[in-house]
Image (tube, rainbow, N blue to C red; front, top):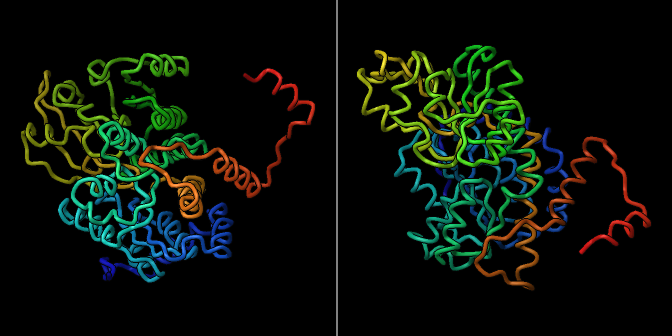
Amino acid sequence: MKSIVNTSASFEEGVKKINWVRSHMPVLQKIEQKFIEEKPFQGLSIALSIHMEAKTANLAYVLSQGGADVYATGSNVLSTQDDVAYALSTMGVTVCAIHGVDDATYKNHLKAVLSCHPHIVIDDGGDLIDLLAEECKEYSDRLIGGCEETTTGILRLKARERDGSLPCAMFAVNDAKCKHYYDNKYGTGQSVMTAIMDTTNLVVAGKTVVVAGYGWCGKGVAMRAAGMGANVIVTEIDPFKALDATMNGFRVMTMEEASKIGDIFITVTGCKDVITIDHMRNMKDGAILCNAGHFDCEVSVKDLKEHSIITPYEVRNNIVEYLISTYSGASSIYLLAEGRLVNLASGDGHPSEIMDMSFAVQAMTSYYLATHVNEHPMTPHLFAVPDSIDDEIGKIKLETLNLNIDKLTEDQEKYLNSYSV
């Protein structure tokens, strides 16, 4: 199968981007050396669907260095960087990804990647697994297992596990310590605020920022917004997360209340219709809406389009203005990145050093599948990432930072174990 990429994009720029992140992902560098020596994926095909930008390209390349035939596509039509996709397609990876295609073409790219009859699937949001469970069952004949990167994807996998339609064993990479402690909190917090600032070129300090959802990602966004001088409001459905936000110094209220006073709204929930026309009619003139969850359903774009009293138009790259009749007149409301994942559709995503750890978990769970499954076949089930993988990556990361930590003495271990159940 040939790659499907935009060959009019700048190949040289793509190479520069990939080389830059490779030099800032030292954990994957060490794993790459291990893969080169052992070739754990020799004879195996890996289908990968992750936001097609430079850090993802590095992961795909590292897997190919381990002997895998890697077939890669994006996981969002606006996050694909054409120059990176083109450059990666010359590095021994089959790439099917073009920026800005329609949903049907995006789906065809997913199917094209799956046509390799993968042994291992690396997913971001659950699109590949959905197709393997429904429309592309014929491509699942060689499946060993896979791993899922996101909170949203994990929710979709749990639903499939409940109804018995999960096609293979999957590792919940999102729940690994090396992933959600750092990627979800520090990666999301920094990349979302960077994308908003770069897209709008507006000041954050002094504005009221409403963060919908106070999971790990929401915590990161709220923390970074507050650190930049914003007045942060958190909306939640979970009483304990709401209490956590309160104890961290944030105001907590309903979206109905927050919609009347917010300047910037950021959804980070994984649910749909978090902000609807009922909330929009409360908003002040100039309110900015964006989404930091995986799918473009948290802010109701449908409501914006249906109720705008002007034809929506792009006032700045990745910013569309809508005019909504409100309870006090009419307000211009600005939507960033079409309501899609703002930090990738309007930015470069998480910092390289953060994704170094997340993609290390993807790489090592894939290694686990390739080297253990013949001896220990895994049934279709959502598995936790083994602690041994988390611990190994954590130790490598400390080494790359030249950091040392204490170790328990034999007496301390005996003392602690004496209280274990």
